[in-house]
Image (tube, rainbow, N blue to C red; front, top):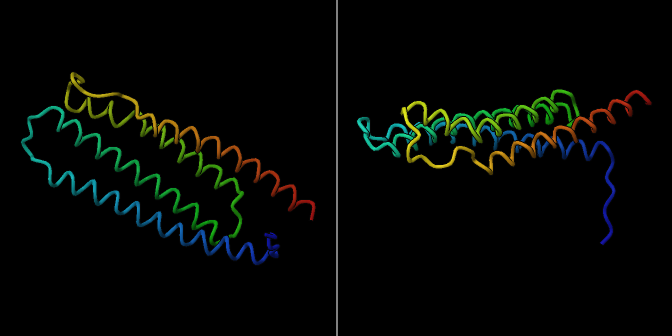
Length: 160
């Protein structure tokens, strides 16, 4: 099959429409993540003595807040893309880098903080969430790719 060639305005319009849709989905995901975390906290027994149960509740709450922050940052970036039609900007590089850092924080902080809050790490599972660690490193690498794209975009704009 032959690939269809589109004009720059057509591509930018599709980019804007798609980015707006993804931004809305990210906002909904952030709200759902916060809502589910709050619901888990509400349904948890207030006088829970089981160490593992208390640890799990703390970890889920912290991870939920960080997940909502990641989704909110992504929504902000996609709203910016839908408004401007340009994905390769310094602001988007910063946003993707922040998302990567939040994933790295989410890899370690929920477990460590939960262990500190309950006052013990005895019997508690692993400290590092390997999938969040990999996601964080992936987003930090993608930030470099977007930074390179922003540099090429700036060179192109200066040439014209």
